[in-house]
Length: 232
Image 1 (cartoon, rainbow, N blue to C red):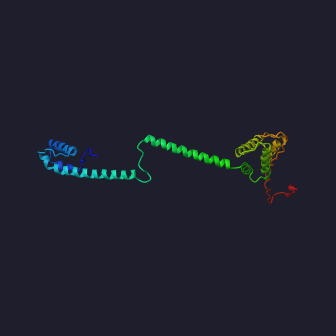
Image 2: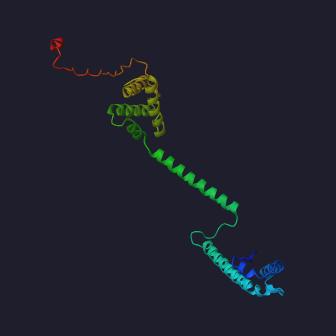
């Protein structure tokens, strides 16, 4: 790519001092012509003494510029043919489409893996995770699982998660202190009445009451002047 300019250095000011404005104008025009075409202009006035020095500087600048362009071109080719790159795509729109398709495929794979992992989890495992260390709640949940299987309406892992969520919601709505006990009562109620679903407890649920202890009174202060008979 050819240069569209030439550099006018500050050091030229010293060389221009002997020239008048007309000579400086002809010199600048001659330098522009040489820089643009490479042809030697006719320089006849006093500017001919300064012109060769500036012309040679233009040649040196052009040589450095061409060398820089050549290196950049070589580096671009190396990047283009690099192993991980295999060249940039020619059509940007096609590249965008391919990238979208790859992203869509990755999303499908992740969704499939997630679904497989969810389906691989058994309802027993869901109930055990929900019950934690509470053996009574765990037993009732597993009994409810057997109850549903005997009714030919088995519970899947997804349904087990919904059941746990339903139990939590019912206990919260009942505003009881013993939430675990209430969940057990709900499960037993459904099994005793042959219900497939879970509903609020219809019986008289005996909740646990939280006893709030009053703080102990502060210790009495006894001094030498205190009449201790008032404490008997």
